[in-house]
Length: 285
Image (tube, rainbow, N blue to C red; front, side, top):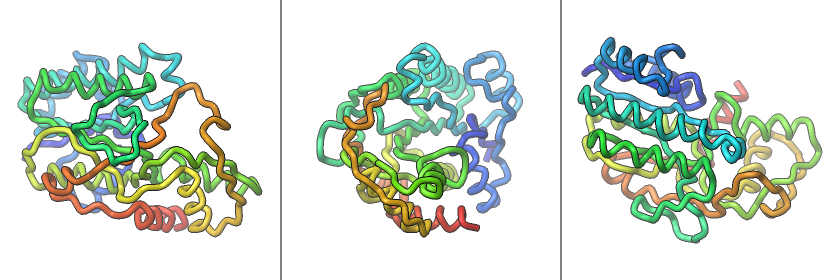
């Protein structure tokens, strides 16, 4: 098999991919240095493709500052749409399979039933809109793609909700956390494992998939679980979204149905609490 190139390798998911690749002794995976990984530079990208002739691309590169995106629309669109189109165009030209990571923010999140891949995508933020646009620019250039929508990513790496709560839990007696937004936390190590599973099994059931851990929770209940597992006695107070205004509107219900991913991709998906225990154990080491 040819090489696997990872774009966005220095971010949270990229670092998790490095961890899982080492565990699985995957030696043909290349984490590109920054100067070769600029998805906004078509000439650099072409040179990278010509050098490596990759069998697979994993794209973790994204503009993910949800609130800042409301003011930085063009920057978000450049990275989340134009950069993805640059990759998709070259994947089509070089017969490279593309694995692209998207988000639950493509949905309005106004319902109360788990979201399937065929449900209408109706983003309510600039971030969600530009990520949806990134999904839409792929099919015109290549049919060999997997788009994995995920949610509430955390891990031992980079900045995320779990590490923030642990830090605040040690500094503060009380935390006020939103309870009326429901979704599913996703351990980025599990997502990295799913991406590499698709490649290692040679799966060709191309298309859009949902991948998060199993189960449903609120940010409040997620925080309570983090404090419990971290042995912290922080008092946790549930608040409504309206009490914590943000520039970008978040989906109030973004629980995703993973039936398609489990059946077509052969994925076994752990419950979010089980994965949180694993992550907390590693953070404690």
